[in-house]
Length: 357
Image (cartoon, rainbow, N blue to C red; front, side, top):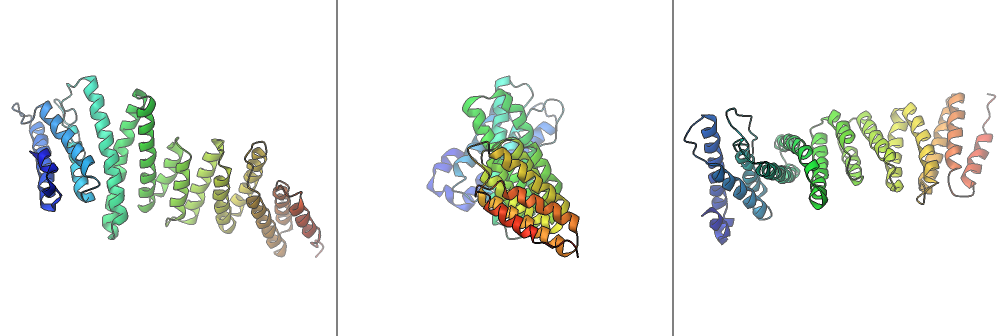
């Protein structure tokens, strides 16, 4: 009857949608209570739990582009509680599809166990997507942060399950799950930034081993966040290091991140800025051996910015640091494919400085 109701054109009526959600939520609550009370006459058999779990997920998936996100989330949250309880009972997840999954008995076959784990993964994925959409659309800061907090908890469940499932999959199924994982890592990173969980940002970068394109999303998120400058610098530095160690071919994107990082470091951490210039020289030299060299305009910007800072040190009588930075500026300029024109210009200006003052 519920499935037929969904096919009815009136099923888009909010009252009807609300009633359908209540039916699944009520069934999940009753099944959970029956298991918790150790009743011998359990109200739900494994087949019935499986029916509720499958249908709540299928309804959520089918209606996710039709219903309001809140209603779809309720169905996803009504799918997840039917997991393996036999004799002892674990803490259940707060979602309905999850609620059904968490209530399955432990006497399942290996095939059913795998099916349940995958269904729970899909519930988590859909739930995180819905929570992200709700958080972004929410004007009330407190409610928005609560959505992000729930998202992070759901992502924790997804992360645990995906580690169990990936070794069992291959081919297209494995690639699809990895794409879903990458997508949720981006949402988790966004949530951590909005919740100002700064320590989590570096942890997420360190633990991620997927597509390089996600690092660009992470960089954009942290640059647009309210993070303190030192957090932005540390996070961008970790992103740059991770991408560099992976020997990426997208040197243009890496160069843009380095420009942002150097701009921030120059105004707050001169020692880090100097180390970063050395890193740029190393990256640019390695890139010369490949078909995709370090962008010339970026090298010119680094060289001129570094030399200007050397002049700043000169003006404050910090001659030793001035000489060191000027040398680095000319080393960067020497890597630019311009017949050493910029190198000669900087050298000429450097030789024009008077040291006996």
